[in-house]
Image (tube, rainbow over all chains, first blue to last red; front, top):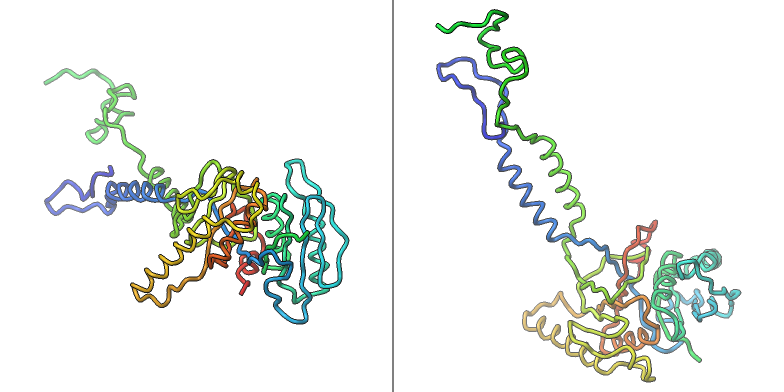
Length: 160
Length: 193
Protein backbone atom coordinates (compact mmCIF):
# COMPACT_ATOMS: atom_id res chain seq x y z
CA UNK A 1 0.00 0.00 0.00
CA UNK A 2 2.37 2.64 1.21
CA UNK A 3 5.37 0.73 0.08
CA UNK A 4 5.96 2.19 -3.28
CA UNK A 5 4.57 3.48 -6.50
CA UNK A 6 2.13 1.20 -8.25
CA UNK A 7 2.92 1.50 -11.91
CA UNK A 8 1.15 -1.60 -13.03
CA UNK A 9 2.35 -5.16 -13.57
CA UNK A 10 2.43 -5.48 -17.28
CA UNK A 11 5.51 -4.49 -19.11
CA UNK A 12 4.17 -5.22 -22.52
CA UNK A 13 3.13 -1.71 -23.29
CA UNK A 14 -0.39 -2.08 -21.91
CA UNK A 15 -2.33 0.78 -20.47
CA UNK A 16 -0.59 2.20 -17.41
CA UNK A 17 -2.89 2.94 -14.47
CA UNK A 18 -3.29 6.62 -13.82
CA UNK A 19 -3.42 6.43 -10.00
CA UNK A 20 0.12 6.52 -8.62
CA UNK A 21 0.58 6.25 -4.88
CA UNK A 22 2.92 8.57 -3.05
CA UNK A 23 5.65 6.90 -1.05
CA UNK A 24 4.58 7.76 2.48
CA UNK A 25 7.23 5.97 4.53
CA UNK A 26 9.95 8.68 4.34
CA UNK A 27 7.27 11.30 4.89
CA UNK A 28 6.14 9.61 8.11
CA UNK A 29 9.77 9.22 9.19
CA UNK A 30 10.34 12.92 8.67
CA UNK A 31 7.19 13.74 10.62
CA UNK A 32 8.25 11.53 13.53
CA UNK A 33 11.68 13.16 13.71
CA UNK A 34 10.19 16.67 13.49
CA UNK A 35 7.67 15.92 16.22
CA UNK A 36 10.37 14.52 18.51
CA UNK A 37 12.55 17.58 17.96
CA UNK A 38 9.71 20.03 18.53
CA UNK A 39 8.53 18.27 21.68
CA UNK A 40 12.05 18.28 23.10
CA UNK A 41 12.57 21.97 22.42
CA UNK A 42 9.05 23.09 23.35
CA UNK A 43 8.61 25.69 26.08
CA UNK A 44 5.42 24.89 27.91
CA UNK A 45 5.25 27.82 30.33
CA UNK A 46 4.62 31.22 28.86
CA UNK A 47 6.83 33.60 30.78
CA UNK A 48 6.78 37.32 30.25
CA UNK A 49 8.32 40.33 31.91
CA UNK A 50 7.10 43.52 33.47
CA UNK A 51 9.63 46.26 32.98
CA UNK A 52 9.98 48.69 35.84
CA UNK A 53 12.36 51.43 36.82
CA UNK A 54 13.90 51.70 40.22
CA UNK A 55 13.54 55.05 41.82
CA UNK A 56 15.56 53.98 44.84
CA UNK A 57 14.43 54.83 48.32
CA UNK A 58 13.34 58.32 47.44
CA UNK A 59 9.75 59.29 46.95
CA UNK A 60 10.44 61.18 43.75
CA UNK A 61 9.13 59.81 40.49
CA UNK A 62 11.84 58.35 38.29
CA UNK A 63 11.16 60.08 35.05
CA UNK A 64 8.43 62.70 34.78
CA UNK A 65 7.56 62.55 31.11
CA UNK A 66 6.32 66.07 30.70
CA UNK A 67 6.47 69.17 32.78
CA UNK A 68 2.73 69.67 32.51
CA UNK A 69 1.92 66.28 33.99
CA UNK A 70 2.05 66.22 37.78
CA UNK A 71 3.90 63.25 39.27
CA UNK A 72 1.54 60.37 39.96
CA UNK A 73 2.25 58.10 42.87
CA UNK A 74 0.51 55.20 44.53
CA UNK A 75 1.26 54.38 48.12
CA UNK A 76 0.70 50.70 48.82
CA UNK A 77 0.17 49.71 52.43
CA UNK A 78 -1.25 46.54 53.84
CA UNK A 79 -4.58 48.21 54.51
CA UNK A 80 -5.08 50.70 51.71
CA UNK A 81 -3.93 52.12 48.40
CA UNK A 82 -3.47 55.89 48.18
CA UNK A 83 -3.34 57.39 44.71
CA UNK A 84 -2.17 60.96 44.26
CA UNK A 85 -1.37 63.17 41.29
CA UNK A 86 0.73 66.14 42.31
CA UNK A 87 -1.12 67.96 45.06
CA UNK A 88 -4.38 66.22 44.32
CA UNK A 89 -4.98 63.05 46.24
CA UNK A 90 -7.78 60.61 45.64
CA UNK A 91 -9.78 58.81 48.31
CA UNK A 92 -7.85 55.90 49.74
CA UNK A 93 -8.90 52.50 48.44
CA UNK A 94 -9.21 49.91 51.21
CA UNK A 95 -7.43 46.66 50.45
CA UNK A 96 -9.87 43.82 49.93
CA UNK A 97 -9.05 40.29 48.96
CA UNK A 98 -10.97 37.71 47.01
CA UNK A 99 -11.60 34.13 48.06
CA UNK A 100 -8.22 33.06 46.64
CA UNK A 101 -6.44 35.73 48.74
CA UNK A 102 -5.82 37.88 45.69
CA UNK A 103 -6.11 41.65 45.76
CA UNK A 104 -9.29 43.03 44.28
CA UNK A 105 -8.24 45.86 42.02
CA UNK A 106 -11.51 46.91 40.40
CA UNK A 107 -11.62 50.19 42.32
CA UNK A 108 -8.02 50.99 41.46
CA UNK A 109 -8.86 50.40 37.81
CA UNK A 110 -11.72 52.91 38.07
CA UNK A 111 -9.38 55.44 39.70
CA UNK A 112 -6.91 55.03 36.85
CA UNK A 113 -9.71 55.64 34.35
CA UNK A 114 -10.71 58.77 36.23
CA UNK A 115 -7.08 59.87 36.35
CA UNK A 116 -6.59 59.29 32.63
CA UNK A 117 -9.61 61.45 31.82
CA UNK A 118 -8.11 64.27 33.90
CA UNK A 119 -4.51 63.73 32.74
CA UNK A 120 -4.59 62.02 29.36
CA UNK A 121 -0.85 62.58 28.79
CA UNK A 122 0.17 60.88 32.00
CA UNK A 123 2.33 57.81 31.41
CA UNK A 124 4.51 57.52 34.52
CA UNK A 125 3.63 56.37 37.99
CA UNK A 126 5.70 55.70 41.08
CA UNK A 127 4.67 52.87 43.36
CA UNK A 128 5.72 53.25 46.96
CA UNK A 129 5.31 49.96 48.72
CA UNK A 130 5.63 49.13 52.40
CA UNK A 131 8.03 46.42 53.49
CA UNK A 132 5.36 43.88 54.31
CA UNK A 133 3.71 43.91 50.89
CA UNK A 134 3.79 40.58 49.09
CA UNK A 135 5.56 40.45 45.76
CA UNK A 136 2.46 39.02 44.10
CA UNK A 137 0.39 42.04 45.17
CA UNK A 138 3.05 44.41 43.87
CA UNK A 139 3.17 42.63 40.52
CA UNK A 140 -0.60 42.69 40.20
CA UNK A 141 -0.64 46.43 40.87
CA UNK A 142 2.16 47.01 38.34
CA UNK A 143 0.16 44.96 35.85
CA UNK A 144 -2.90 47.08 36.57
CA UNK A 145 -0.89 50.29 36.08
CA UNK A 146 0.36 49.12 32.70
CA UNK A 147 -3.12 48.03 31.70
CA UNK A 148 -4.54 51.34 32.92
CA UNK A 149 -2.42 53.40 30.54
CA UNK A 150 0.55 54.16 32.81
CA UNK A 151 3.31 52.06 31.27
CA UNK A 152 6.30 53.79 32.90
CA UNK A 153 6.20 52.25 36.33
CA UNK A 154 8.87 52.95 38.92
CA UNK A 155 9.11 51.22 42.23
CA UNK A 156 10.25 52.86 45.44
CA UNK A 157 10.10 52.10 49.10
CA UNK A 158 7.46 53.86 51.15
CA UNK A 159 8.94 56.52 53.40
CA UNK A 160 8.21 56.56 57.07
CA UNK B 1 -9.88 -32.64 -13.73
CA UNK B 2 -11.13 -31.95 -10.29
CA UNK B 3 -14.80 -32.46 -9.54
CA UNK B 4 -16.45 -29.21 -8.74
CA UNK B 5 -19.40 -28.85 -6.46
CA UNK B 6 -22.48 -27.83 -8.37
CA UNK B 7 -23.69 -24.36 -7.86
CA UNK B 8 -22.80 -20.92 -8.85
CA UNK B 9 -19.33 -20.49 -10.13
CA UNK B 10 -18.03 -17.00 -10.52
CA UNK B 11 -15.82 -15.86 -13.26
CA UNK B 12 -12.05 -15.69 -13.10
CA UNK B 13 -12.05 -12.10 -11.99
CA UNK B 14 -14.12 -12.81 -8.88
CA UNK B 15 -12.47 -16.08 -7.89
CA UNK B 16 -10.40 -14.38 -5.23
CA UNK B 17 -13.16 -12.12 -4.00
CA UNK B 18 -14.02 -12.58 -0.31
CA UNK B 19 -17.66 -11.95 -0.94
CA UNK B 20 -18.34 -13.96 -4.05
CA UNK B 21 -15.79 -16.72 -4.16
CA UNK B 22 -15.89 -17.98 -0.60
CA UNK B 23 -19.15 -16.60 0.67
CA UNK B 24 -17.43 -14.41 3.24
CA UNK B 25 -16.13 -17.33 5.29
CA UNK B 26 -12.84 -17.87 3.60
CA UNK B 27 -9.39 -17.70 5.08
CA UNK B 28 -8.61 -14.31 6.42
CA UNK B 29 -5.52 -12.72 4.99
CA UNK B 30 -2.65 -12.41 7.44
CA UNK B 31 -1.76 -9.04 5.98
CA UNK B 32 -3.56 -6.13 7.68
CA UNK B 33 -3.51 -2.80 5.98
CA UNK B 34 -2.53 0.11 8.20
CA UNK B 35 -4.63 3.18 7.67
CA UNK B 36 -2.03 5.73 6.78
CA UNK B 37 -4.25 8.72 6.00
CA UNK B 38 -5.51 9.48 9.55
CA UNK B 39 -2.00 8.84 10.88
CA UNK B 40 -0.50 11.37 8.50
CA UNK B 41 -3.30 13.82 9.28
CA UNK B 42 -2.59 13.49 12.99
CA UNK B 43 1.15 14.00 12.46
CA UNK B 44 0.54 17.11 10.40
CA UNK B 45 -1.74 18.59 13.09
CA UNK B 46 0.77 17.83 15.84
CA UNK B 47 3.63 19.36 13.84
CA UNK B 48 1.61 22.50 13.13
CA UNK B 49 0.62 22.84 16.79
CA UNK B 50 4.20 22.42 17.97
CA UNK B 51 5.56 24.86 15.40
CA UNK B 52 2.95 27.42 16.48
CA UNK B 53 4.15 27.03 20.07
CA UNK B 54 7.82 27.04 19.12
CA UNK B 55 9.90 29.63 20.90
CA UNK B 56 13.23 30.53 19.34
CA UNK B 57 14.49 32.13 22.56
CA UNK B 58 14.23 28.90 24.50
CA UNK B 59 13.97 28.82 28.24
CA UNK B 60 15.52 31.95 29.70
CA UNK B 61 14.52 31.10 33.23
CA UNK B 62 15.13 27.93 35.16
CA UNK B 63 11.80 26.98 36.66
CA UNK B 64 11.96 25.38 40.06
CA UNK B 65 9.33 24.19 42.47
CA UNK B 66 10.47 26.67 45.12
CA UNK B 67 9.68 29.68 42.97
CA UNK B 68 6.06 30.27 42.12
CA UNK B 69 5.87 33.20 39.75
CA UNK B 70 2.99 35.67 39.97
CA UNK B 71 0.69 36.08 37.00
CA UNK B 72 0.14 39.15 34.84
CA UNK B 73 -1.64 40.19 31.65
CA UNK B 74 0.27 43.20 30.32
CA UNK B 75 3.62 41.60 29.70
CA UNK B 76 6.29 41.67 27.02
CA UNK B 77 8.47 38.83 25.83
CA UNK B 78 11.30 37.94 28.15
CA UNK B 79 14.86 38.44 26.92
CA UNK B 80 18.21 36.93 27.74
CA UNK B 81 19.72 38.73 30.72
CA UNK B 82 21.24 37.82 34.08
CA UNK B 83 18.64 36.25 36.35
CA UNK B 84 18.34 36.98 40.05
CA UNK B 85 16.29 34.19 41.57
CA UNK B 86 14.55 35.01 44.84
CA UNK B 87 12.88 31.98 46.36
CA UNK B 88 11.22 31.83 49.76
CA UNK B 89 14.50 30.76 51.29
CA UNK B 90 17.46 31.82 49.12
CA UNK B 91 18.73 34.35 46.65
CA UNK B 92 20.60 32.78 43.75
CA UNK B 93 22.43 34.39 40.83
CA UNK B 94 23.69 32.18 38.00
CA UNK B 95 23.52 29.10 40.17
CA UNK B 96 25.45 30.67 43.07
CA UNK B 97 23.66 31.20 46.37
CA UNK B 98 24.06 34.80 47.49
CA UNK B 99 22.23 34.82 50.78
CA UNK B 100 19.35 33.54 52.80
CA UNK B 101 16.06 35.41 52.70
CA UNK B 102 15.55 35.01 56.48
CA UNK B 103 18.85 36.75 57.20
CA UNK B 104 18.07 39.51 54.75
CA UNK B 105 14.67 40.08 56.30
CA UNK B 106 16.24 40.51 59.72
CA UNK B 107 18.92 43.09 59.05
CA UNK B 108 18.16 46.65 58.09
CA UNK B 109 20.69 47.42 55.34
CA UNK B 110 19.51 48.86 52.08
CA UNK B 111 21.57 46.68 49.76
CA UNK B 112 22.88 43.10 49.57
CA UNK B 113 26.68 43.42 49.27
CA UNK B 114 27.24 39.88 47.95
CA UNK B 115 24.63 40.34 45.23
CA UNK B 116 26.02 43.71 44.30
CA UNK B 117 29.52 42.28 44.02
CA UNK B 118 28.38 39.35 41.94
CA UNK B 119 26.46 41.59 39.53
CA UNK B 120 29.43 43.93 39.21
CA UNK B 121 31.64 40.99 38.26
CA UNK B 122 29.07 39.83 35.70
CA UNK B 123 28.83 43.30 34.24
CA UNK B 124 32.61 43.55 33.98
CA UNK B 125 32.83 40.14 32.31
CA UNK B 126 30.18 41.14 29.81
CA UNK B 127 31.91 44.39 28.96
CA UNK B 128 35.35 42.75 28.71
CA UNK B 129 34.03 40.03 26.41
CA UNK B 130 32.38 42.52 24.11
CA UNK B 131 35.45 44.74 24.13
CA UNK B 132 37.63 41.76 23.17
CA UNK B 133 35.25 40.84 20.38
CA UNK B 134 35.16 44.52 19.32
CA UNK B 135 31.39 44.32 19.40
CA UNK B 136 30.16 47.88 19.40
CA UNK B 137 26.48 47.07 18.95
CA UNK B 138 26.11 44.75 21.91
CA UNK B 139 26.84 47.40 24.48
CA UNK B 140 25.78 46.85 28.07
CA UNK B 141 22.11 47.75 28.50
CA UNK B 142 21.74 46.96 32.15
CA UNK B 143 18.95 44.42 31.78
CA UNK B 144 18.32 42.05 34.64
CA UNK B 145 15.50 39.55 35.13
CA UNK B 146 14.17 39.14 38.63
CA UNK B 147 12.53 35.78 39.15
CA UNK B 148 10.94 36.03 42.55
CA UNK B 149 8.44 33.85 44.32
CA UNK B 150 5.07 35.46 44.84
CA UNK B 151 5.17 35.14 48.63
CA UNK B 152 8.41 37.08 49.08
CA UNK B 153 8.05 40.33 50.98
CA UNK B 154 8.80 43.65 49.36
CA UNK B 155 11.45 44.23 51.99
CA UNK B 156 13.65 41.65 50.27
CA UNK B 157 12.69 42.71 46.75
CA UNK B 158 13.54 46.31 47.63
CA UNK B 159 17.05 45.31 48.62
CA UNK B 160 17.48 43.24 45.47
CA UNK B 161 16.32 46.18 43.33
CA UNK B 162 18.64 48.56 45.11
CA UNK B 163 21.61 46.21 44.71
CA UNK B 164 20.88 45.78 41.00
CA UNK B 165 20.64 49.53 40.51
CA UNK B 166 23.90 50.24 42.32
CA UNK B 167 25.68 47.49 40.34
CA UNK B 168 24.64 49.21 37.10
CA UNK B 169 21.62 47.11 36.19
CA UNK B 170 18.93 49.73 35.84
CA UNK B 171 16.51 47.95 33.50
CA UNK B 172 14.65 45.74 35.92
CA UNK B 173 12.34 43.08 34.58
CA UNK B 174 10.02 41.12 36.82
CA UNK B 175 9.49 37.64 35.42
CA UNK B 176 5.83 36.67 35.48
CA UNK B 177 3.62 33.97 34.09
CA UNK B 178 1.70 35.25 31.14
CA UNK B 179 -1.99 34.97 31.83
CA UNK B 180 -3.88 35.36 28.57
CA UNK B 181 -3.49 38.51 26.53
CA UNK B 182 -4.83 41.90 27.41
CA UNK B 183 -6.09 44.25 24.71
CA UNK B 184 -3.36 46.55 23.58
CA UNK B 185 -1.11 45.39 26.36
CA UNK B 186 2.09 44.73 24.43
CA UNK B 187 2.00 48.13 22.78
CA UNK B 188 1.36 49.83 26.12
CA UNK B 189 4.18 47.95 27.77
CA UNK B 190 6.68 48.56 25.01
CA UNK B 191 5.85 52.24 24.85
CA UNK B 192 8.20 52.91 27.72
CA UNK B 193 11.22 54.89 26.55
